[in-house]
Image 1: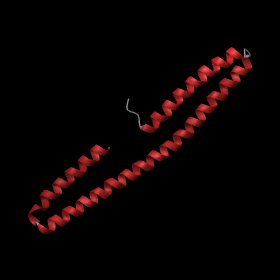
Image 2 (image 1 turned 45 degrees about the vertical axis):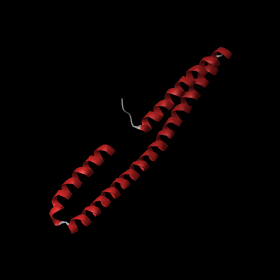
Image 3 (image 1 turned 180 degrees about the vertical axis):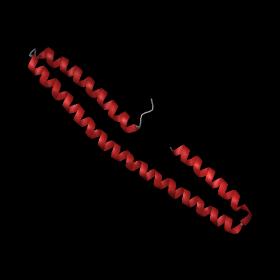
Image 4 (image 1 turned 90 degrees about the vertical axis):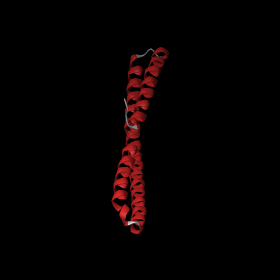
Length: 116
């Protein structure tokens, strides 16, 4: 199972939160044998974990999208730099133009595959 990082972070948070609720409810029930206190504590814990998990997901997803956009910009600028070098090289050696363009396309495709 290869989940995106923002899903993994929220999943870990939910598992820790669920474990916390489970053990804290057992403790409250043991200490205060009143049924109403346990139900209120249980509801409060679940509401907190669900709301904070949703908020955490939104924040992390926003940050990961910003990082992905920055990575795309970096890859585009690298591609433009390589293309610039090739044009300079081809201006001097016209016979290598087709070869340079083929190698560039393959290199850019390989870089995009390895970045994905």
